[in-house]
Amino acid sequence: MINKKIQINKPEAIFTTSEKLHPFMRPVISKAFNCDVFDGYGLFDGGISANECHKHTGLHIDTEPALLEIMIKMKAIN
Image 1 (cartoon, rainbow, N blue to C red):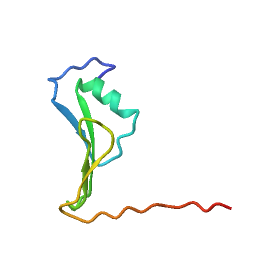
Image 2 (cartoon, rainbow, N blue to C red):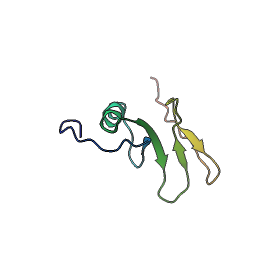
Image 3 (cartoon, rainbow, N blue to C red):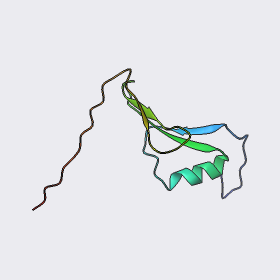
Protein backbone atom coordinates (compact mmCIF):
# COMPACT_ATOMS: atom_id res chain seq x y z
CA MET A 1 0.00 0.00 0.00
CA ILE A 2 2.79 2.39 0.89
CA ASN A 3 5.05 1.57 -2.08
CA LYS A 4 2.21 1.59 -4.62
CA LYS A 5 0.54 4.62 -2.98
CA ILE A 6 -2.77 2.76 -2.60
CA GLN A 7 -5.24 4.80 -0.57
CA ILE A 8 -8.37 3.55 1.16
CA ASN A 9 -10.94 5.10 3.45
CA LYS A 10 -9.17 5.61 6.76
CA PRO A 11 -10.27 3.09 9.41
CA GLU A 12 -10.64 4.29 13.00
CA ALA A 13 -8.03 1.76 14.12
CA ILE A 14 -6.35 -1.53 13.22
CA PHE A 15 -6.53 -4.44 15.70
CA THR A 16 -4.02 -7.23 15.10
CA THR A 17 -4.63 -10.79 16.30
CA SER A 18 -3.32 -14.32 15.86
CA GLU A 19 0.39 -13.51 15.51
CA LYS A 20 2.75 -11.37 17.59
CA LEU A 21 2.85 -7.70 16.59
CA HIS A 22 6.58 -7.01 16.51
CA PRO A 23 7.80 -3.46 17.22
CA PHE A 24 8.94 -2.89 13.62
CA MET A 25 5.46 -3.76 12.27
CA ARG A 26 3.38 -1.15 14.10
CA PRO A 27 4.75 1.99 12.35
CA VAL A 28 4.47 0.38 8.91
CA ILE A 29 0.85 -0.70 9.45
CA SER A 30 0.00 2.66 10.98
CA LYS A 31 1.51 4.51 8.03
CA ALA A 32 -0.21 2.28 5.46
CA PHE A 33 -3.67 2.74 6.99
CA ASN A 34 -3.11 6.20 8.53
CA CYS A 35 -4.48 5.15 11.94
CA ASP A 36 -3.47 3.76 15.32
CA VAL A 37 -2.60 0.05 15.64
CA PHE A 38 -3.55 -2.09 18.66
CA ASP A 39 -2.11 -5.51 19.47
CA GLY A 40 -4.30 -8.31 20.76
CA TYR A 41 -3.93 -11.91 21.87
CA GLY A 42 -6.56 -14.60 22.00
CA LEU A 43 -6.92 -18.35 22.02
CA PHE A 44 -8.97 -20.06 19.35
CA ASP A 45 -11.30 -21.60 21.94
CA GLY A 46 -12.42 -18.22 23.26
CA GLY A 47 -10.61 -18.57 26.58
CA ILE A 48 -7.83 -16.12 27.39
CA SER A 49 -7.68 -12.81 25.61
CA ALA A 50 -5.64 -9.67 26.06
CA ASN A 51 -5.68 -6.32 24.30
CA GLU A 52 -3.80 -3.04 24.25
CA CYS A 53 -5.25 0.30 25.22
CA HIS A 54 -4.36 3.70 23.78
CA LYS A 55 -1.21 3.89 25.94
CA HIS A 56 0.45 0.94 24.09
CA THR A 57 2.35 -0.12 27.23
CA GLY A 58 1.32 -3.77 27.33
CA LEU A 59 -1.70 -6.03 27.17
CA HIS A 60 -4.68 -5.96 29.54
CA ILE A 61 -5.68 -9.54 30.33
CA ASP A 62 -9.37 -10.44 30.33
CA THR A 63 -9.65 -12.84 33.27
CA GLU A 64 -13.43 -13.36 33.15
CA PRO A 65 -13.77 -16.29 30.71
CA ALA A 66 -10.72 -18.39 31.70
CA LEU A 67 -7.78 -18.81 34.07
CA LEU A 68 -4.33 -17.61 33.07
CA GLU A 69 -1.15 -19.20 34.36
CA ILE A 70 2.11 -17.33 33.75
CA MET A 71 5.16 -19.56 33.51
CA ILE A 72 8.63 -18.06 33.99
CA LYS A 73 11.65 -19.95 32.74
CA MET A 74 14.56 -19.57 35.13
CA LYS A 75 18.13 -19.81 33.86
CA ALA A 76 20.61 -21.69 36.05
CA ILE A 77 23.65 -19.68 37.09
CA ASN A 78 26.83 -21.74 37.39
